[in-house]
Length: 418
Image (cartoon, rainbow, N blue to C red; front, top):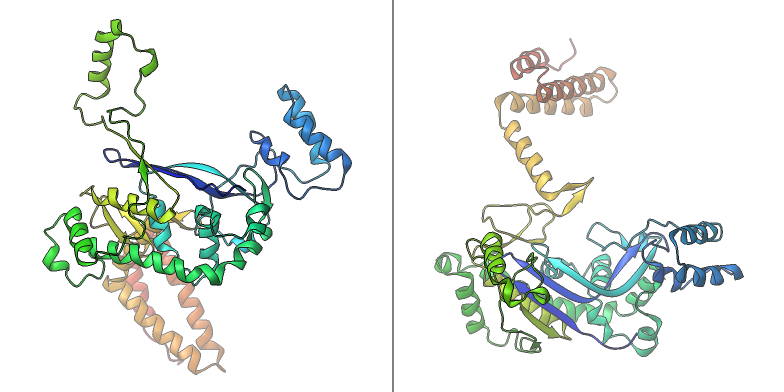
């Protein structure tokens, strides 16, 4: 791969939209995507079958869908291929070393709203190797200038690499780069924690300041924090206003379209709040790119950065009282879903009938553990739990009432064997 590391960032504050263009890796479970034949053409580990290579060339030059299908079907007989496989970004839910597919690096254009790269970076635990691997793949820009000549030449864009091969390369640089990553991460975390009053001892003193004022205050107190990279960029601003998804194409507009254009503007943006000037910055430093993101987030006073009460990672929200993020946590549930379930559970558990249930359950558990040689207590404990859980489930479904549950608990409020 050429050591060319160009990152482009633009931020549209009205609709909170950041365009982040950089080099990143993504995961493919199988070595082909029907709409991305380039991946198959650049598959690093190919079968020995001589026919495989010629089929790849035929697939690249196929002139019809039918011909593509024929070639793909023949390829399936040679190597395990899924024509519907697509590249997907890697997240905190992936255990990378256990993945059996492929990593492909390519220029990525990410349109981010609340899911900013900055928040993932400050949420990584670099003492955990899997989090380091996520950074290695998702922020490959950092390593373009870091890898030695042998390794940078091993990696090409639009090329499929077995996950194990990428892990092998990444592992070589873990000890060397870990300290530097933790250091730069701490620069951002300390600043963000200060601005958004996360364990900030000055919280009461600065609560009436805007985020921009807090940012100014922090940079005045700690003047060299971002000095190393905060100016390492140039801008490509056009100094003009524009709309996103405007229904008329600029290149098609003529002078005689003046009334149509006026009408379209009034219909598309009657309040005048959606027009913007899009600032684009170019840098070859990933930390400069993250600093630019922070600069613009701070400029939007209605936004808050918080730490999720479930996954303990940073997230962005327009609501100050939100506790959980929208990241997928487990079984397709988000942290917000899990938080809602736990909150409902705590609310229920605070009711007298559920307190009574816990008290009786604990007593029966103690007896079952104390008298292990007497089957009665173990059976009594297990039967109690089974019926109690059924009662709670029926109450949720409206099949039973808390009053009925309470009366049944009264019959269970004894444990000793008569």
